[in-house]
Image 1 (spheres, rainbow, N blue to C red):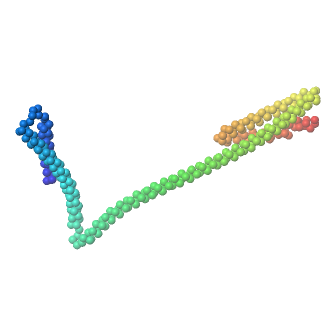
Image 2: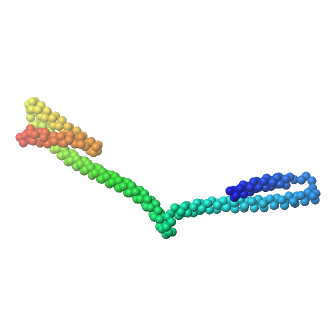
Image 3: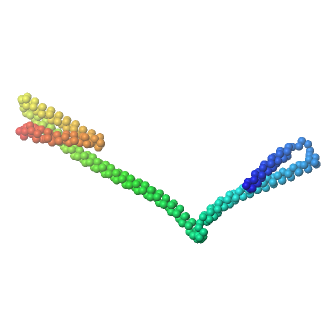
Length: 278
């Protein structure tokens, strides 16, 4: 309380000195319009001296104010220390009369150990929670890894299946091309035989000529159908593996046609018979 009151008085005195200093500075800044007399010079010197004293007093008051601030801080620190000592004294007064200083120290140590044990238990609980969260995260990562491996194996199996289908279609296309080549060769043979028959027998019956023409037309239609089938199969290969499943069965159905319908013995028996007779 005494220190605070002294500080308030010092602040009030400092304010008064600052006001007086400001007044003197304003008076000193007034420029005389005439030459100064001796008495005025004396007054001016006294005024300068007062200004210097005021400046020195201001600095002294500032230093004193800083010292008061430091004293207040020290006083607060001493009050905190006094409170701590009072608590120690109260704790010692509540202890039993037969208790020695060593026993008191041991009891304080035990209290500190209990507080530390509680903090350690709290830290252990938080560590257990973190370990459980890490374990759950590792399980999720392992499950995700297993799922990704299964997806990868499924994709690889699908790619192998598509590759095998493409190979099968390539084999079917090769077979179809061979069948077409054979049909073209048989067509050329039949055309030659028909030309020879027409050249040798101008009076060849019209009904037999009609049958031969119909047979040739059937052969041409079969050839065109087979060409369209091959074109469709090639177009399917270009379209990619996304629609292989739907068109693969249709391709197999069409691929069986040349072997069953357009074989050399079934389609061209008459041509082969005529060739042997000629």
